Length: 346
Image (cartoon, rainbow, N blue to C red):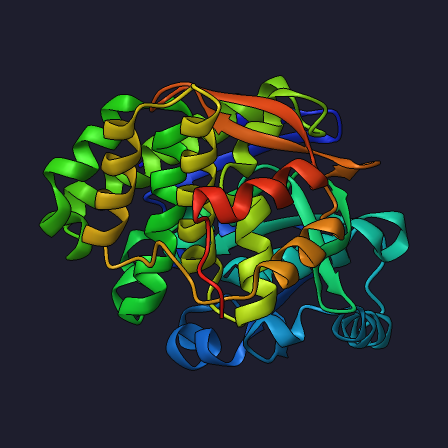
């Protein structure tokens, strides 16, 4: 087991990579309530420690204020006070909801995560972002607050559907693109091991991704500068996700290709580097282009939470492993799309 620490303004978070669900109880304290989804509970409920469980549904459609309100009602019924503690056991949706609930119930109580998906282990559960969707727009309501711990149990990845595994790999590629050429080369050279989730490959991906993200978060907890680099591929990605209703990782894969092409257009990335990024994503069974109306993409980006006035803080690459953030106007993005072939017309 490897432990990494994130220190934020609101406390510290211990990331336990290789820890097991069966050891969860030693991390808990006070009156603990578990939040999980129906699938995770059916698979692992018999391994949960003895405490109250609040079960939610699955999918992006449950990540709403309505779900949060129902959980609040249950916590009130259970008479959970400020000494209480909440553990989210699940993927990114469960972790986001759990963190938001814990951070706002009684003005904030302690919480931790057991991440059950690759996407959550390498990204969603790490870094202290907690939030829910609003009116169809992703993570529009949320807070920054660190969990006390994140348990990354590698054994739980074995029950994931292939599409979820692939979706998680997109965020691993993202971390490699913005900060680790060694990880990028490992993914290129070990594609079979990566897709098969062989233990040495999983440990490398999770550890390196968490190391990259935790280092960034330690420098910029509230996304005022450095942390924006973690949004590589997400501006276009969130637009694709909203319009096409596809998994987050698939949408981000297309968004990374779009950002890479835009980086090349601005003289920051070579043709060969763009090809390497797109080729790696394709080899990992991730999409790189979508049939979608460009006007709808621009409309979705206008509602992106990273927008400031008429510009978006856009993440580009100055070579693989080196991300930079530049403000780009919505108008400039709109003008560039047909010329750069960022997405095909639907």
